[in-house]
Amino acid sequence: MRNLRRPQQRATELDITSFMNLMIVLVPVLLLNMVFTQLSIVPLRLPEAAAAAAQQPPAKRLELVVRADRFELNYPAGVPLRQFPLVDGKPDFAGLASFLKDLKQTLQSKQLDQREITLLLEAGISYQHLVTTMDSVRSFKAVVAASVVDAELFPEVALGDAPPRRDGPAASTGAAP
Image 1 (cartoon, one colour):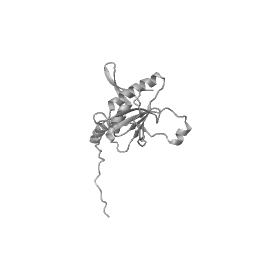
Image 2 (spheres, rainbow, N blue to C red; image 1 turned 135 degrees about the horizontal axis):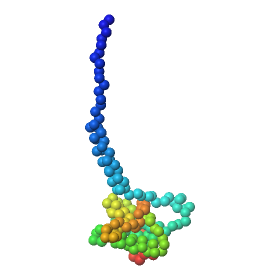
Image 3 (cartoon, rainbow, N blue to C red; image 1 turned 180 degrees about the horizontal axis):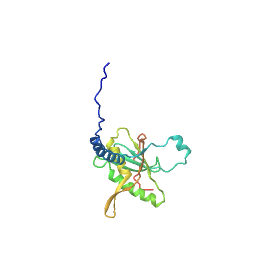
Image 4 (cartoon, helix red, strand yellow; image 1 turned 180 degrees about the vertical axis):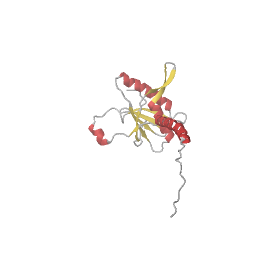
């Protein structure tokens, strides 16, 4: 029998330089994208279940009913406070934000720290209408030390379904409590 000898193979080194270059670029890009994604998420809550609400004493809750033709602000929940009809065929986001700003100041002067608002949406409300409403109720632009910042209004937003429309006169357009 003949001995077959294979030529000795030398161990070759694996060149991972290009892979390392890719990782050096890819890791920071992915980390930056994570930060931007985190900033674009708005935390939402669902309104409390009836059973859980029955165990707790009734709290004064701020509700905003979003309808196609107006906003209805209730405080405490279910008690009409003010309506905001359409202005030039568009929702009155500026009027809503201005009134909520005054309401927040009134509540703070009474030592009430109200941070929650429940948006009750009528069927057929567009997504853009919802997002703009959420932006209007969460914060407003304020000037602090010569720079414009977002000041807090009611940052804890909960969503729900709007109650059916009431037949009768429009709710009062009274001032803050």
